[in-house]
Length: 323
Picture 1: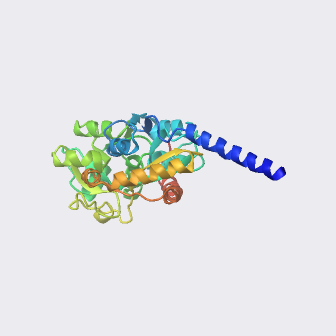
Picture 2: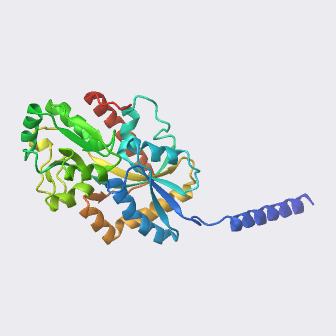
Picture 3: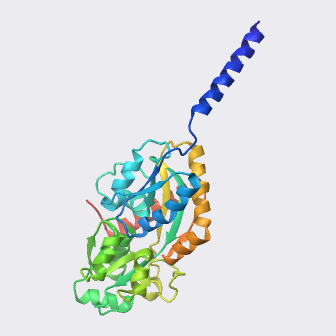
């Protein structure tokens, strides 16, 4: 009797489990929001829009890009950190909010870059281009340093804590100059101001700088990474142009709130990797100066941790701080 009762109970549990699974909708069954911490037009926004449409087609649901600009990406990052871990609110995270801001801001951030997120995939890697308004009488790094020592210059960025800001702080520190930093709410607005001559220079993402350089509206004199950019190989690095060792890279990746189910994380990782491998997407990203850099969630998580350590040293050495 006990055996029969045990068998009946096992059958009932199996039936209940099957019924539960049948009633649980497959992911995703509604639109997904991908938050971007900067205004339209910059590298984060360009990357999000390059991925979102194709990802939506693959998943069978719309992926909506939601720009929440402000505080160098902190606003959007915090919103995702506090969202339900159900896979319907994602972050197109930036190096600024995730790796630089934890050491840059005097006050404690409302989120923890490691504890509060489940990394999904690193999307792209890129350089910034030291871009000048045509009216600036400098055509290389040495001439810019000499000019900055003789007169006041200002530079715009996508916001306090972004690589455009920290690249400027690192440049000033290594070159022995001090230029005035003017933060905007994204790379797009900063580029508009540069083209209009309201700021003299911007350490701009390749996504926003390259089209303007090709159009002759600005001039790119150096790239911030240790290697030249494949898209514009004629532009030298800052390191080879007078400041040996200078290196400030840029990257974006997709994350979900912590405790998002592993199955959803892996589904999104595989889907985004497929999108990034599509020839038209790769070509589009390349033309924006962005290199697809997909990997596993674990690889992305480890990379974020290493970047936090790297940029904490840059912040400390440069003396850069944000309120």
